[in-house]
Length: 319
Image: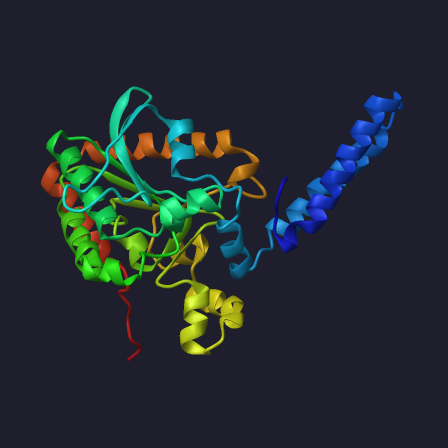
């Protein structure tokens, strides 16, 4: 791969060695198949050892992997006839959130998601996936259209957080997120949410109220980024690994705490190693959940969503 993380170095070294041997074999017409097979078996073992024992901080790093799939990638892989809708009809079009309508195996859906850039120029245009108020208002505009035409809503979350700039605050960042929380809780159509990368703070919550919520295996979902938490608690961003551990931000922790409905298993090493597989798995979950949720009456759907969020954070004190 073109780029990677520190803990992936043993994997990249073996992959590079295998490619070199394959190239040498083709150039020199020498049979090195046994050596290549031995290295491939070793590679699989190293992959398993590395990715099955990741710390929460390493998962955060993997959630930010530069080759990880973004919303538009999933749209290309899972849907057809995608039509993007632009603008909030109040201020501007926020490129950090992509919204529109598409078909999943012939069934119409509204789809909303954060979008990061692949290079510096694109990241600046997309604001690194950090939405302004107009992004959340655009998302709500599309959700209301989906409700009007009885279309289910699919949300793909991937943001370190809502943009905290002065302009965003002046235009009502907090109000836009709060209104989305309120309005999404009452929408009378199914909402299925996936955290596909970073799920940071109110930036994620602003489009994250759903009937079903899933976190990908190497993604994270948290009230604050580990670096932000470390800066507040210890005044040191270098404490981010400890913060990641304390925040319980992995899919397994969140599932155990009842915050999410499930963890979507990723290909070993991350979604970028097998995009078609992960897109197929997510599409299957979407189709299954929409079929189940569509069978509920509108009032039952809203009541179940309300009950779901009321249960989050419930605990018992010892007598």
